[in-house]
Image (cartoon, rainbow, N blue to C red):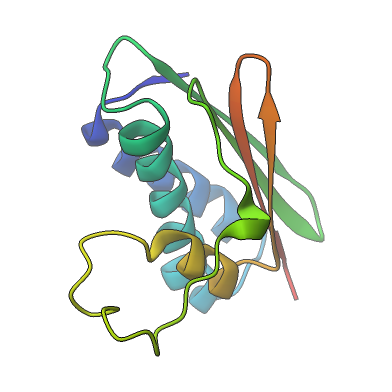
Length: 131
């Protein structure tokens, strides 16, 4: 469990990347896919879901087996409908935006990105297969 303070992101990402390396995930997945997608998920949970409120928590659950990495990030926010988020780098204001690219990046770097609105917050699930 983390507070919604962004300085807590890097240690979690480092731990998950270390686990993936030990499990035999490729260097590319450990160097790019996992850290970028997980950083985006945690930042979104802290900054958007919990509104940067350090009193609110973010829960991270990691399951790693021989075939895949599953990470669940749960915040205390209202959540959103992932199916209604359509982001594309060809949009006119893509480069000028200060936000709005996180879900796009997660979708590009993970095999599956799912979400669920809960009674107590919002859960985002990232799944990456080893091969």
